[in-house]
Picture: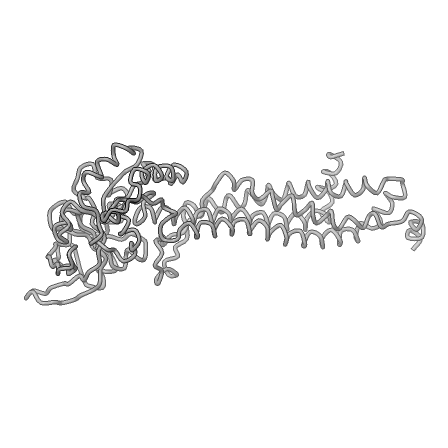
Length: 427
């Protein structure tokens, strides 16, 4: 019976071609959007983890409450001992200290007077230690446009847009003006060793990067750091493991009523920073909404297609009833046809959707022109990601919509009366 229905679907294009095109298009869009949203989420997670949040981040409790203000007066003291403890207790992660600060980058002329100035955000990294993972975490070698990575005291990297606006080149000199941990004025001269481009708008606009030892001295933060970030060694965020590690760490530093309680360390997962949990929940809801919307829209279209098909096949159904075929059997055969069409359309749509998604995963789309005013830690090249679920998610709207549309349209079969069939044929 299935073979008979399949041959009918393949040979009679009038009843299968339009539904097949609808199903294939809907499934293709479902798969493509699912992979696109997954790729966007992963791209955002990776960028945030590498350049800002880490998979896990440790700060003092007071610093964490005002992290957006970069309150270095609430930073860790004695960071080296805590860092060593983290490496011993949680060796599955890469741990590295960072200092963030804001200030002004001043460019002097030949006479030592100000030639150009611009606001800058400084990031202090461990660049000169042999076992430091920062070169790989921050993709510094990959993003270096000119010059070299700082390997000597007093050298900095300047982001591409900032360097362009201030006419800076490798080998030039710049003065950074900021404030120390105690609120005093901090002024120091640095040599520009290289120009770097991250491909992330907020970083490219005004970032200065240097070795953490230089900036600790510059900001009066000896053996101090604003934060310690941890990333899994394969750079893949593992939500359940991260939450378990954070819970274990925070239990060791339970809240105390002592005066120093604000300076006790607290570990936060990636989702617990910057409202990322709400953003991920929204993306998950959006993914579910895509499937629901396509099921609804495709069901309506296929319902109408079924009604039109029933009109074209009015005589065929009448003959089958006149020959004694039961209404329930005809109804089930129509549903069988729809499921076969849904399966074929889902296979075609999934294949096309996966192919396009793979192309976008490899090549991506440059959205830099849309990110000029963005403050999100998101790469300028947006990519899809082919996931195992992408191979099956299209079958949900593909099969369910065809079934639902035909099930509704096919109800007309039960309204036909055998007593009036001869009059219909005579007419």
